[in-house]
Every structure is written in structure tokens, then in C-alpha cells.
Image 1 (cartoon, rainbow, N blue to C red):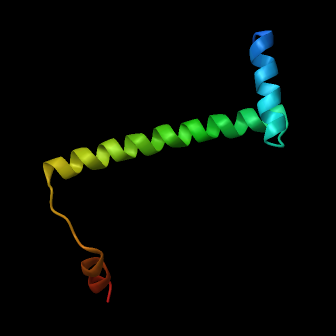
Image 2: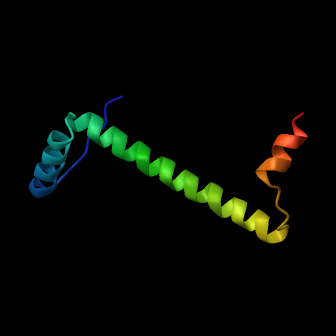
Length: 71
């Protein structure tokens, strides 16, 4: 897939320099940055859902109890 991106000259310079500093080409830098952002937002959503579930039912299980239950 090819994606076109419009940037100001200043942003284009910043993107290129950042990619170069991290030994990546521009395409890989943008790809990794977007994937990282998606992952962070997904993780935050999972956290919010888990916190809401915990607030509804604050029961907890220790790691020892988890291990004992697997025998």
C-alpha cells in the first residue's frame, strides 16, 4: 500500500532527521510510530475496561492462588 502524506517543509525536515537519528528510512519510521500509537491507545482502552470491571467487582486473586488452581 502506498500512502501520501502532506507535510510542511519544517515537518518534513524534522521527520527525516528523526528517522536518520534512529537509523530508519522515513517509511519505516512513520510505520513504527503509527503502530506504537495504536498499541498505546489499545493498551489504554484495555486498562480502562479492566479498571471499570475491578471497580464493579474488586475481588482479587494472588499469584499463589493462580498457580495453586492450575494443578
